[in-house]
Length: 296
Ligand SMILES: Nc1nc2c(ncn2[C@@H]2O[C@H](COP(=O)(O)OP(=O)(O)O)[C@@H](O)[C@H]2O)c(=O)[nH]1
Ligand SMILES: [Mg+2]
Image 1 (cartoon, rainbow, N blue to C red):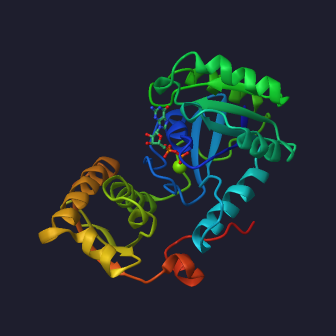
Image 2 (image 1 turned 180 degrees about the vertical axis):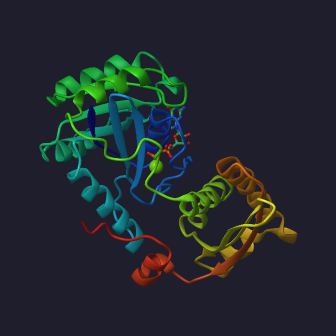
């Protein structure tokens, strides 16, 4: 069979996680319109009789600004070096900028086979596609480019078939029932974070960490989940809770519904908002909240 690792790299918000979810056919990585949605390296696994594709979702490319984004950037760079293939995701809707070519060149220099997914073609004028393709050939970067829409499922099949052909012959890397390397607890905290990303603006969602205190299934089959939403400032806490607790009630309710879908069972969710000043600049807290440098 053909099997291998494919690092999915690109700028924040390019559409990497959405593309992986649609390629894998299941949600393995949360998605939002805000940068810094993905913080960890997440593996999404697609297995069929004659191939296994292991997508490596990455936090994206950032200009480091605090200890957390610094670590996220390192995670991206480290992930790119350990794979059989690099899929560079480019937001077509945003347009191809010259600085993007520099980034692509940098990854190309790693010497790992690479291609480009030019995504979000569903929300851009069609005539821009050939113009951007011309920009690519002018730049002298010689890579296969796949215009796709993850949201509309356009050209995804062609991209998948291409990727399968790029994989080396080898063994299965994960057993066939595995879709992600992350467990249920991780996904539960990510679902909570996703709802906060969707509801709140600016620095609030970026300064959130989720700590799961209880994750248990009771005798009636109901999951009892108790978690802390850690934020960076007292005024963030007030906004997160909202007037008469309305904001926190609303996000918790959306999160609970998604958790129930994910777990396939009823969920009893309790959430608390806590403050840890500037945790994103404190490596020991970053670690405590589950974010770690990739060592190997
Ligand atoms: N219209 C459209 N939006 C997309 C597509 N792919 C991703 N998005 C949106 O772009 C935003 C960022 O997506 P995400 O996958 O989180 O990007 P990432 O930061 O690169 O992982 C989200 O609001 C997505 O819904 C696409 O193919 N079409
Ligand atoms: Mg992402």
